[in-house]
Image (cartoon, rainbow, N blue to C red):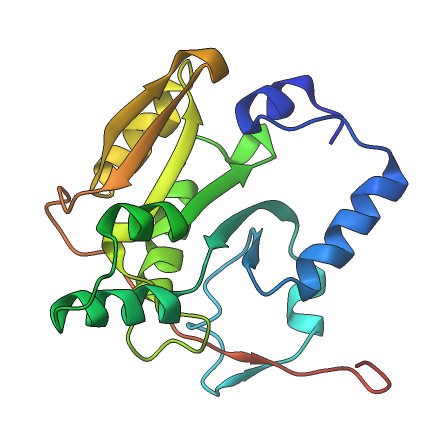
Length: 205
């Protein structure tokens, strides 16, 4: 990531090209990270009536950013702890709060695509998918465990998450950031989208 502005907005460190490739490989296999690449283009739903999607449909669409979930712990562990508490076990509520959360992050890398509602739409699709009871493991995640950490000077991103039902719950001056958690303050439900299977090209794994 060569843009100083993006590094500041995402609290990222400068990496070499080799380090960037290694990070991408790691994110592809890590079970505690979910990354979705954002592409610019017309709605695939309007053109594709089937449940599958061919790779050539995506090649011409420019990549404009990404949206991510970082899982600290697993939803299953959290559910087990809550079940123990419900049954009168000795589960520690404070320990539970410390051991499981789901951090949400989004980046619109291309300036031409900012302030157009793309981040708002992409986050709704991600959050709706991630909290859907029908979502595959390691999902779904409880809404009350969603958290976002944003630079305290990034007013636009803070307002964006507030529109989605988050509220500032902590300020961390030493890191110059605020922490927002989902509190259900959004007036309307998140929109949802259609999930399609990407067909692998011949020889791909």
